[in-house]
Structure formats: structure tokens, C-alpha cells
Amino acid sequence: MRRFRVRPENIIVDRVTFDAEETRHLTRVLRLGAGDIVEALDGAGTMLTVRIEQVSPRGAEGAVLSRAAHRAESPLRLTLAQGIAKGDKMESIVRMATELGVTHIVPLVTARAVVRMEPGGRGPRWARWQRVAQEAAKQSGRSIVPDIAPPRQLDEWLAGREHEGLLICLWESAHSAIVPQLPLPPITEATLVVGPEGGLEAAEAEALGKAGAIIGSLGARILRTETAGPVGLALLQARYGDLGGGDP
Image (cartoon, rainbow, N blue to C red; front, side, top):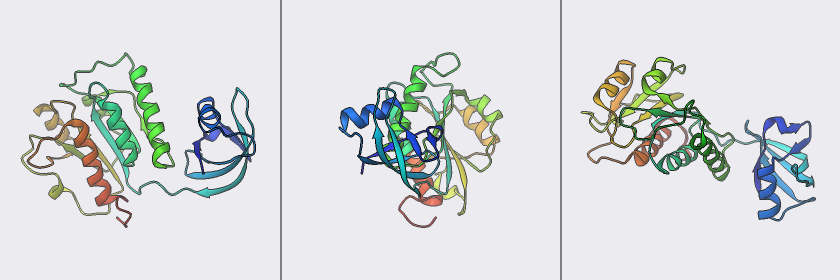
């Protein structure tokens, strides 16, 4: 059965309205229309079975036939704080991080970042990352779309961190590997920090250490930034989350 996303505010009692983008996919790509039955994720953990009843330029509308809990989220609340990478690397990172179950992504402006973001951070690149996250969440069957923060300076982000939990930094110049330093489960919240191309400067790693981060490498080989983040996320999901399908 075909699956779509709807915003919670577009569900009123047992009526659902699909936005213009999902309606175009429903009608022009999949050739669906009135009478067809589809699934819709509400972004809050519920799967709706919907019968399409009307299609118009403003959006398709349908009736909710049933509701069921959609359990596709990890018990680990996981944030990726990623040094902004150049080109389309950041899009790949957002896509893989979404597939791996992150709940938040924080693009970080660091000393060695070569990308300059628009004032305020909410420009075309940020909007594109949002769309990539939405597409990846839909493709991977997730209940929610990760929140992508506007880009932040590393020191500013560290000073204003609100979440508790494990803080981990992958740094290729660390003297110790990261995995042996990780505490035993259970851990319910973790943040992974990864530098951009060229990595973090020593002063940045030191600041993270002072903030309580566990700092370590992924071993003898140096990984690209677009590889290191997903590898680190997978390690954390395997240790504390649901990667592999077993109990953490």
C-alpha cells in the first residue's frame, strides 16, 4: 500500500488533507484518485489508513478508515551535531542520519568549515536539507521527521545546549578509540559531534572535552566526514538503540 505524510494540523477528526506536494505525487506519479486506499503517517507516531475521496488543485482529501501505532522510532534520542560539509555531502549526511534514526540535526559552523551560510541560516541550503530529511523519513518508514536546526557556531551551541545525556565527539587526532570509552547501557539520550572536511581544530576538541564530551577516534583509518557521522550513529544505535532489531 502506498504511504504518504500528512501534517498533524491537516487531520481534523476523521478527515485528512494532503498538501500540494504529496497530492502531486499521489495523482501524477502514482495515478491514484478517488476510491483508492493509502497509508498516511501523521508525524507523531500514528499510521492512518485513508480512503481518497476528492482530488483538487488545493490538495487531495480523504476519510480515515483506521488508526494504528507506528513503532519505527528508536528508544535512543539521538542528535547529530555535524560540521557543515561542502557541496552535496551535507545532503547525504542528512539522508543517512535520518535513516539511522536521529531526532535532531545541528549544522555546526566550525573553524575549518569552508561553507558560508546565509544570514540567519534559514536559506536555500537549509530548506533543501529539510526536504531531504522529509524524503528520507518517508522512504525509511519513520514516524517522525528529524528537526534540523539553523546553523550554529560551535561555541554558541555548546554554551546553549539544553539536552542532557551522553556527549560524544569523533576526532581523528584523539589518542584513544571511541568504542571502549562508551558507558554500558542503558543510555536514553546521546549527541554525536563530527567535524567538517579537515576535522575539528585542537581548541575545538578541547572545548568539547571541557563540556563533558567523550572524545575518541574510529580507529586507525581516517574516514571522510560524510562517512564518520553515519558510522558513529550506527555504533550508538547498535549499542543503545534498536539497530539490528534486538533489545538495547
